[in-house]
Image (cartoon, rainbow, N blue to C red; front, side, top):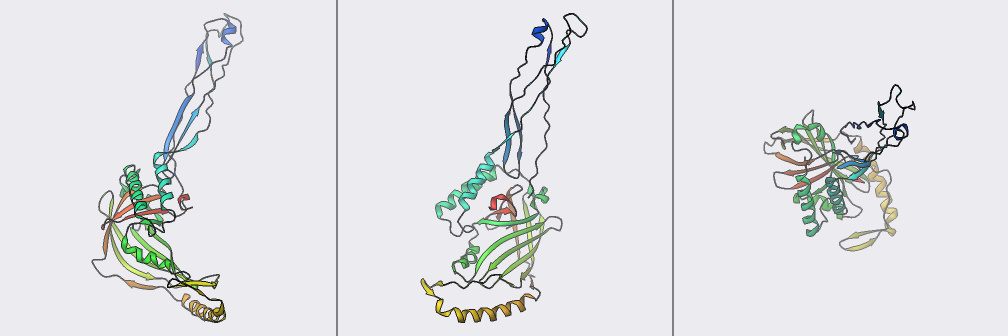
Length: 320
């Protein structure tokens, strides 16, 4: 695998309106009418939206009440233009992102996606890639900065890891993320695990080099096994599923409670230790990553194995 949205500023110059007095005074006092103008703003790269509105410009003529023929007669009247604020609408890219998020919901990062759903996801990804607002992502490295949460992948080697969540009350994959530092040219891939007693994480640190406008080369340097962090609230379930059977734990709650207390003591001791770092000296521990879509909240990347990754920027409304 490999925010605050920024809006492009734009200026509105309202056309001036002027009427040359060529008739009698009562004609000069008549109201002026201007055709409403439709104003369109640039697309917001963060939400895939553009601003558009029918902005009626209303004018009021300023009239000289002097008698016909006096000084000032024949001078043009002035008009004041008032523009109403624009209304937000979805752009085509924004609509595609919304549809993609709807499809990804409930797929457990792709693990539970059916064949038909995968096909629909691929179609939407292809359409989004055709509308990539950042055609040269490596020329916009600050846009890559930050923590990205994995929302979907077709990387089959990751499925056994994701499948660990099928062991109820034991362990599950809580989060898979990638953090990019464009100034230090570093990438950190992290998998966070959650269990009934504690949480922990496995992380790999890597360096990357820019090889093309879309591609970076990644070289892994070390792996880190984080020390377990004790879960704040430990709840013993009444039942668990084991080998397809529901096992009633009620008679064993006392024993389980004692075991948990002992385990918690061990976890507290381990939590005070530094994480375990494992150097990666293998020269073959490299990969490349192609970024095919990038905006302030969504990134689509492809790896050297052809797998696709859909990532969402931490803090984005797309995660809700």
